[in-house]
Image 1 (spheres, rainbow, N blue to C red):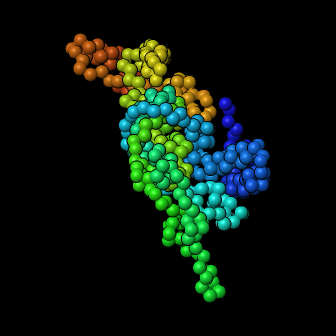
Image 2: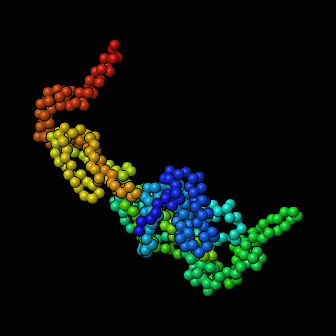
Image 3: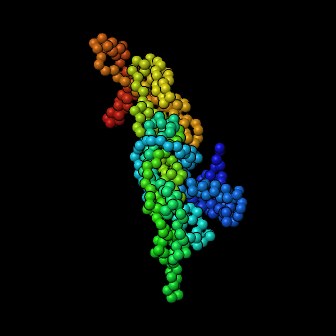
Amino acid sequence: MTQQDYYKILEISNNANEREIKRAYKRLAIKYHPDRNQGNKAAEEKFKKIKQAYEVLSDAKKRNAYDEYGHAAFEQNNNTGGFHSSFTTSTSDLNDIFGDVFGDIFGNNRKNTKKKGSDLQYNMNLTLEEAVQGTTKEIKIPTLNKCTACSGQGSAYGAKPQTCTSCNGHGHIQMRKGFFSVQQTCSTCQGNGTVIKNPCKICYGQGRIKISKKLSIKIPAGIDTNDRIRLNHEGEAGQCGAQSGDLYIQVTVKKHPIFIREDNNLHCSVPINFVIAALGGEIEVPTLTGRIKLKIPSETQSGKLFRIRGKGVKSVRKGYPGDLLCKIIVETPVKLNTFQKHLLQKLGKSFGEVKGENHSPQSKRFFDSVKRFFDNLTQ
């Protein structure tokens, strides 16, 4: 199913700045907010798309990933399996975008919201072949998951926590001091607005338990080092049944013994002997999908670059592949026997010129430059 472009959802251009994105979000979100469109399912769905688009485009890293890879940067299948790699935890929670933007529009009179779970980061190493062709990796991560015994509520047998009678569920208490009114966090419920009378014996009232979770991660073809993939709601579970955080897959592509990647192009050095360089011939060069023939013209110099179209990396977002650039390295022969040395000596004598004016154009240009240099010094 084709997903709608985030820029079109917010009705902005691809080069819109941060202020323009936020302004467009406020305007559309007020228009389609569920509180202003009671019972209108179409408006509700529109509002969800607007909020999702803003969440991506308002974050610089997410926006860069979307601009490069489109929706493929965020969509994943959540099958199970087993695979181990390095893992780190991100302690910074993403703020609720809805609360950030609408706090100044609808006011901050809502009850205290439950804390969203922490985002997690998983560092994944890929071979160049895996990154270029795409693959599926199974990973295993330690995380906090919703307690199944209490359904994440923290109360035994899944009962809902009771509304705090001290603050009436607001999470804070208003106290008057003379002409002033001071708001303090409720000491009974610690700002949660609810209290647990009978804590769950499995999670001890936390609503979360430590587990090792297995996930199957789809790696899109063309991904590169420092790219990130986001899996929605696959981070740590929120407190007391709150929304889970996200899981970010941080990609690093390992060094390849033959190829060097530069954007969507691949580079490699191809050594040839001086006979093929001088007389020409046909050689085999490697690609990521197999060997191909490359014709070497006669009198090819070391450092010559041959471009093979379409044998590079296929871009995730643009859809067309880069090129393979082969740099020719003319190799000097080693471990020559007596007969071979004799042949080379005869070849050298046949040139008849020390400076190789006819047979070595680079040598001729070099010695001509040297002569001009010294002539200028003696003037």
